Image (tube, rainbow, N blue to C red; front, side, top):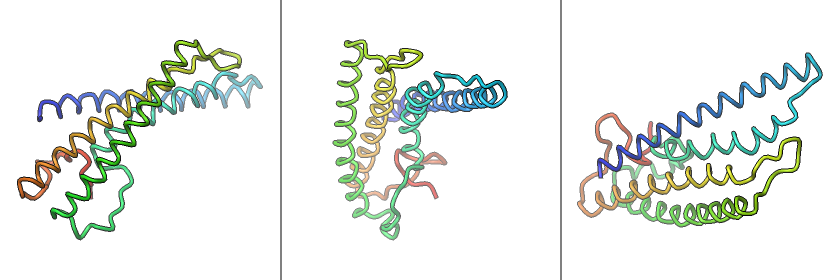
Length: 181
């Protein structure tokens, strides 16, 4: 399981670098668009479509799994007093299983929409006929990796619950989905 976690961690980092490159590209396109718009009255007609369809989708979905791994997502701390207890482990397992069902539905719908858009050669009407399927690929890959992360977190908690040992961090690294203080 540790080998799989390292492999998924490498994918997390790769996707995080791609998300960072996407964010940098968003900033650069906006800067160029603003300079051209206000100093030369010649805005980039394609910037909104590129940013809105491709880059924001890439940044959001490719950072999902690493955000979950680090525990940086929004998490309700109402039950902080239960930290380290079997009750909290059981509640997290139930929550993660429900999340897996939702994420699987999202992944399924994204994959179907992406395949249909690709096969139909769907494009956006505009200056540049941008294909509509790449955002579905970004979303599918990001949600797919998130599903793997949630499965690993669920397995870790099931093992901890069944073994009766307290669930804690290993070393300085956060375990999948473990909340950071």
